[in-house]
Image 1 (cartoon, rainbow, N blue to C red):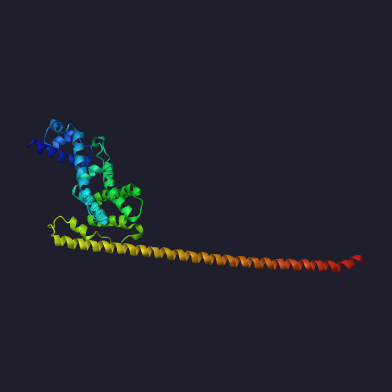
Image 2: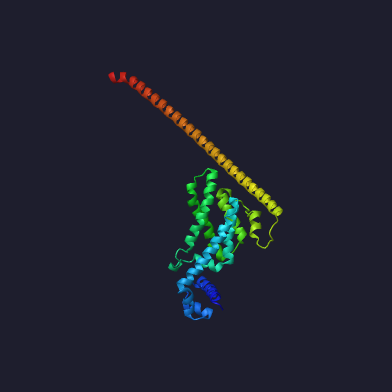
Length: 299
């Protein structure tokens, strides 16, 4: 085995052990024993456990970052979001050991190679995409960094959850992620699915499409995007109508409550007027009675 092959073997063995036991739970002795070499061989290649750990983490960081960066090269923002979510889930599915290493509590040996720093790097790229979208839609582009952290954090945490459950499938998980991120809670699609353009791109087994097929796919994608936008606009209109109906209902109830209050006030006023009249009659009667009793007192 050449030196390069031995180094690659040690990296792969260390990757598996770090994923299973973490940095602190893995020893140089264990790495060497699994590779059937002596400890000095590991030291010769990496200088120690910290060195091989740093190489493993850096490889995983670069692999995942490359997949996400490639996904963000799509033309439409919705497709970018779909492909980025699928890229993360694909990485988790195909490189579970690497993802487990990245999401573990980071060790000092990893330097800046932590999952948090990886998320920050991805967010900085998403930030540029969001800034353009915000500017096009009349929102403040200065808010893009905050929204990028929200969006990437949502996808990353979902990925951590999916790492163990693996259900539903990655395309379905990606569709639901995009459904929430793109439509929001008030406009959720009850049956979300990723666009045909993304499904086609994600299917690596298919042969390269011809220019004609690509044009047809582009047309299909545009139709899907337009349809999705129509659905979103329709849902927004329905939500707006529901809000208007709710406001009208509240106004009606307030008017009825106001009328009832006015009615009660009028009834109370009538009662007060009747009571005043009764008191006045009682006062007149008392006065007449007093006058009638005066002659008897003089006699």
